[in-house]
Length: 386
Image (cartoon, rainbow, N blue to C red; front, side):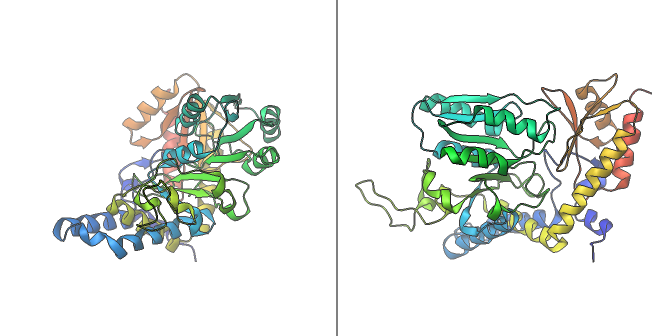
């Protein structure tokens, strides 16, 4: 039986105070996550933080890796805890074993969280960046043809977002993997706008590395994310930063410089993570699983489709149509700039955002949004030029 939507929304208090249509930036914090954060903070204040060390500290990390593994659809040994998507993309980009003259392929739609690590690694290792110029009208075959044109024997890494943060277009990552793997290259994916919005199955995916945040579609706190590292690709990804958690055990090193990492992706974890945030993320994931992840994903698709239908019926709206979509819908409105439209709508309590180059308005719709949210968005847009 599907959850009662009113009950679900009551567990996300922020959606009661505004028309919350910007999950692609920050999802509303769930009550389950907030309660766990507060309780862990209280314990740290009243009992101290030494109780978080040792076995209990290891336990929450293991439980959280397992929770993220269920989101990824992979083994928990393939998950490293990170602080955000950008953290994961840096780990993936910097850990590849480059030689001068190697190439990284990326594209013009990338978020800085994935793009800037590429630029920095290229500068450090004397690499060539091959930039694929994408257009908002490109279909999947056109996108693939553009990538195929630049991927070649010197391609060491392809770095892409699964969903463009600008247009909402879903890139065919498995087909991109099929282009780069025959050349011995790897695929790193920024999943910030996909993980938590659509079901992932990394066990059947061609991605070597896949990074997601906790604070967007998973409705968790900031400062927590996860990186999937394909079990078969761990040997191809060096540890860039190392610390105590990066070791197989506390004594797995000597003064000659030899140190032994654990078998799985945990080797890419470096230091301590804010335990209240870990507790909040774990409780938030458990709440989503109690709702039913299939229900969460299906409802997100249904609400997004309804949003697109409503917006396409407004004469002044120019909807950016994409053949497939996650939870993002991008468009323009005749007679008003995206930034001005966003500012005006915010005055009415309708929270969306604009994105640059191309300048678009972006609406993020998730499982908790209802028809009233979409109707208020429609009325707000129709009133902009009134």
